[in-house]
Image (tube, rainbow, N blue to C red):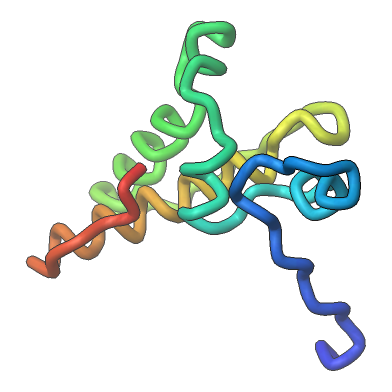
Length: 110
């Protein structure tokens, strides 16, 4: 059951100003919310990679959806390189796209 799953700690999204605040700002968990991504995700990482992997995944998903095909993909990488963070970005982008498609105002701001 999910009742044994520990609650996710809240991530401080402002800079730490004391050593005591450091563990609230820095810990090895994926960025999952729009607020966390806005605070900590650096778009410059795409320049280092040479490609926006999230955009590429989104295009593959959209193509599969338009063709009514199943999309299968995988992400690989060492622990802590941002696989789950990239999936969080993708989910937020897809939710934003869905809201725009449905005519709802707003978006994730990413």
